[in-house]
Image (cartoon, rainbow, N blue to C red; front, side, top):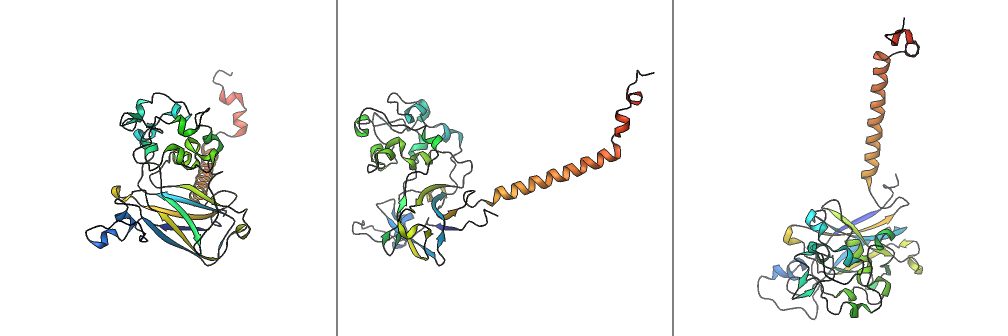
Length: 304
C-alpha cells in the first residue's frame, strides 16, 4: 500500500531534441543525424530539454533518479576493475585489476579501473520559468559506503594528484567534481560514490538529486506547474543499445515506488500457508496420535 501511494514520473531522454547553442559546431551530412543529442554529442557539447508537466504537483520528499538500461554493472570483470586502496586515499602503485584503465600516457589514472571510467556524467538542471529549482547534491549516499572513499590528507587535492590523470572518458579532473563543496569533492564526491555502488540488474536507477525543501516555495514538495529538465548530454548509451531515463518520485516512509517487494511477500506468505495446510492434512491422516506417541509400549520394540 505504501508503495502504491508513491507518485512517479519517468522520462526517456535517450533521443532528446537538442537545443541550438551559440558555440555549436557546423557539421556536414544529413541534418536529421544531428537533431538529437544522441547523434550530435559525439561531435561536441550538446544541450537538450525535457518537459515535466505536474498539473497536480508532487508532494512530499521529491527525489530525482537517473536510470540506465542494458548496462551490466554486475559483470564480474567490471566489478573487480578498481583499486580499493586507491579509493581509500592511498597514493601509490595501482592494482592490476584496473587494467586497461590503470595508466594513461605513462601517468597513473585516479580513480583507476573500468568502473570509475564509466561514471555517469550528464549534467542535469530542473527549471521552472527558466529559473533553477534548488536541488540538494549531498546527503544522498549511505554513511557506510562513504567510509570506503577517502581523499589523501595533508595537501590540497590538486597537489596530491598533480602527477596523476583522470580516466580517459572523464571531462574533469578528480579535484573538479565539486570544487565549490570541499567535503563533496574528489573521491568523496557523492555522485561518484553512488555510481560505484554496483547494481544487481542491467536495468537500474541511481539517486541523483533531492529537492531542497529548506527553500520556502518547495517546503511541501513541487507545486503544480510545468517544469523543464535542461540536460548537458555527455553519457553515450546508443552504442550498446541502451537508454537513459530521468525518474522523479516522492518517497514514502518505506522508500520509493517498488511493488516487487510487496508482491514477493504476499506470494511467499501464501506459499507458506499452503505448505502448512498440506503438512497439517498429512499429519492428521498419516501421523501418530498424541496418545500413541507417549505410550512406550507401542513405540519401544524392546518393551515387554
